[in-house]
Each structure stands twice: as structure tokens, then as C-alpha cells.
Image (cartoon, rainbow, N blue to C red):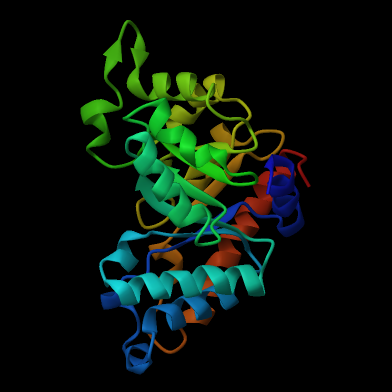
Length: 275
């Protein structure tokens, strides 16, 4: 999927919603835990209830890795289910991988070849040779961490040297490694005021924006500062959708929450004449 295809999917659904499948086993409704693969069953019902409103899904790999081999099987089943049932939806492995070149090559193979993800989150700290193996796959994307929403982001990401903050250097230098069709950036929604400056550096790249909803980020602020003439945003919500209810009605409630976000997104897209 390239930049234009992703934008066309956004226009078609009138939505730039990414649903985070951070499927923590302890928070899954208890009645599902009697099933053979409760994590997959939970994900499947969430996906079926939200696919009309979401253009992307983002499983956070940690919640699957923590369960050992069974967790990896749940993750693989989830991705394959999305691709088979709703093939136009963009799927991101939130894995935050990166290492020396030959190791990154293996990470890339794991997520972009052996499992049918469209994209994988990658950390930039080790530089170009740790990132480029992920960029060697046609129609696949790197989602590079630029500015995160956690408190610890202040420790390094805002470090200023000669008037250039570290996250700004990440954005500037990394554009040489990829293109609009295979490179996007993570920018936390709780730092939405920074999007104006970020757009000066990367005016056209897609941004994956976590932190809306349970983490307190404002969708209105993200849209105000982050939207481009090709949308340029995938806004992620995880807990605010998938764990909005803990009863047997959890999937229906998740669908309603996703629809609420989609309707708000539709309004912002219309205001920018993108629909």
C-alpha cells in the first residue's frame, strides 16, 4: 500500500482511525478466557465491530510476546484474520525494533515477510544502517519513532544542540533514508502543540499519533496542527475503544466508541475539504 492508496482508504471511510490491539490478557472479559485462544477471540470481535470505522490496526507486540509461543500464535492469527476478512486495512506491528544491520534484517523478515504486516515501528537511535533493512520491502512501511508522549521523552528527545532538538534531527536526517511511500513517523498526541513545528520539517509524511483517548490527547488539536492535503494522519486509540466495556457487550461498545471517533474525524476532514 502506498501513500495515495492509504489516503484513498481514509477518504473512503471518512476516517483516519487506527485501533490499537493492546490486548492485555488480564483486561479481557472473563467469559472469553474459557476459550482456546481468548486473545484472538477478543481481537476478532473487536475487529468485526470496528472495521467499518478503522483504516488501520496496531497490535502492540509486547502484549503477545509476554504470553510466550501462544501469544505469538494469537498475534499471527489476528493479522491473518484482518488480511483475509478486511484486506484493505493497514496493519502495523508496534514492535519498536532496531539493531545492527544483519539483526534488523531478521526483525524485518519476522514482521514484514513471515507475518503479513504492512508496517513496523522502528527506533532510530542506532542510525541509518539499523533502519534501512526495514525499508527494503516493496509496499511496506517503517514507522519511525520521532516524538513520544511519555514523561521520559524529555530525557533525550528535547535535547537541544546548536538550536536543533534531537527529535528534529531524527525527522530531518531520516527523510534521506525513505520516501513518502514507505516512511512515516510516531508523534504522540499529548505533544500535539509540537505538530506545527513538526509539519515544517515533514510537511507531507504520514504521522502515526498515539495518545488520544485514555492518555488524554486531543483529537481536535491533532487535526488542527497535523492534517495535510492528503490527511497525513493515522490517529491511534487503544484502551479507549477496546476496553471501553468489560461485559459480553464489549464488542458493541467498542464499535460505538470507534464510530464516535470516526464521526469526529469526518468533520475535520470535511472542514479541510478532503472529502
